[in-house]
Amino acid sequence: MSVLGLIVACIFFVAGLVGSILPILPGAPLVWLGMLIYGFFVDFQGLSTAFYIWQGLAVALVFAIDYVAGAWGVRRYGGSRNAIIGSLIGAMLGLFMFGPAGIIFGPFVGAVAGELISGKDFDRALRAGIGTLLGFISGTVLKVIVKVLMIAWFFLTVL
Image 1 (cartoon, one colour):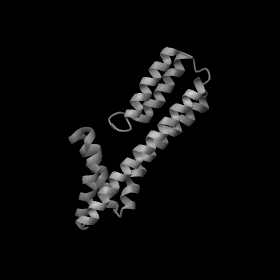
Image 2 (spheres, rainbow, N blue to C red):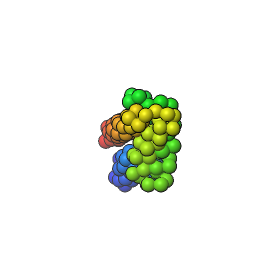
Image 3 (spheres, helix red, strand yellow):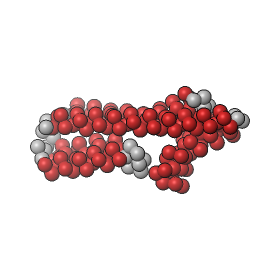
Image 4 (cartoon, rainbow, N blue to C red):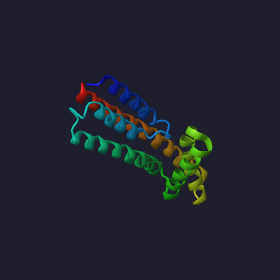
């Protein structure tokens, strides 16, 4: 066990968890990278190829959650394909225009706009926007859970 390696890994883990909320940080890849860097510190003793492959699959799961959660929220609350497309466009524009807060409010505005453009009434458009917010929140919670499980597995393996 390398204390310096653990410190570096923990810094990456914290950054990865913060990345669950701040989309500027690639959360799950940072967690995986922290594990990889630790592996170099200890010449990968106790950390198998299978460990890294399964952790990589967990990273892929986090990316899938990111996409599916937002779409699920829109669909669950009656949004159409236009609301999903609007929420994706809103997420990108919101992030660039308003920073981290834009990743929350951009998809909401985008979903509402997508529904309004497609001719839906305001109440239905608002429901789609709320669905986007709930999908985002649900996705964030699930991503944090997956990352915490990744980190817990790492510590169970190395300690």
